[in-house]
Length: 257
Ligand SMILES: Cc1cc2nc3c(=O)[nH]c(=O)nc-3n(C[C@H](O)[C@H](O)[C@H](O)COP(=O)(O)O)c2cc1C
Image (cartoon, rainbow, N blue to C red; front, side, top):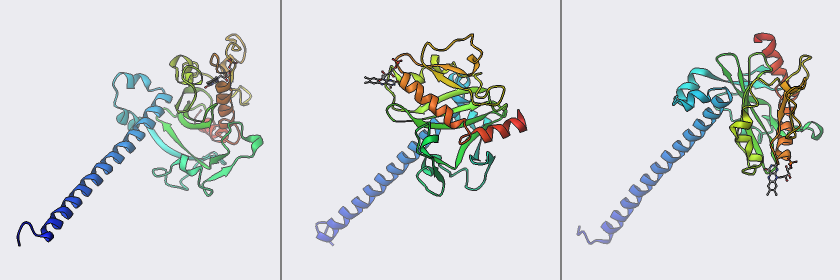
């Protein structure tokens, strides 16, 4: 058959299309894998930051190694405060669960101080090898949802670290929640007071009194950002209340504190 035949022309064009399609698909798969890996790395970094490993990371520590040797993923049934294996922890996505009626529940408006509407039944938490727990938190900010992690020591009340990894607050204003100078207030604050009552709060900038009896439960707000400060306050009040981690932390304290 001549090289100029119509059949050969179509065959070459067809084969070229097939080869190009395969190359495009492979490139897309590699990109999706890389994006998924980067997303996972970012979460791991955030969890390590909240858990007090920032210095090791800044010193060049390998995030994956630090994470796998220090953190264990667990699911907590928020209603009972018990660990659960009702769903597979490795494939569970708490953000997606919020949109699944079987895995989530609506929050009555009067209890919804974080402005989240619905919460997943199970929380994907990380148990750090010292017995501390790194807990996901979320709530409405001034301009959109805020997602973060807060680390609590094995005593069930002492904050070890706090960080948001996603929010839409304004740079220079609410986005100062990311400022290390603001975040450094959090470690050693107490979520509950000596009577076991939820006491951690975020106050308007300037209202914090380091000599007050409740200074250990108080976070100073951000200048010019009272709205974001009160949103973070709401997030804390929801997640450490009875409908958040209070039952789980009470058990943690009883068992390990
Ligand atoms: C464009 C724009 C963006 C703002 N972004 C924020 C913000 O992200 N967080 C915040 O708390 N306040 C923000 N504010 C200011 C709030 O409207 C409000 O004035 C402030 O929270 C009050 O804080 P203050 O009592 O400390 O002054 C913004 C204001 C404007 C005009």
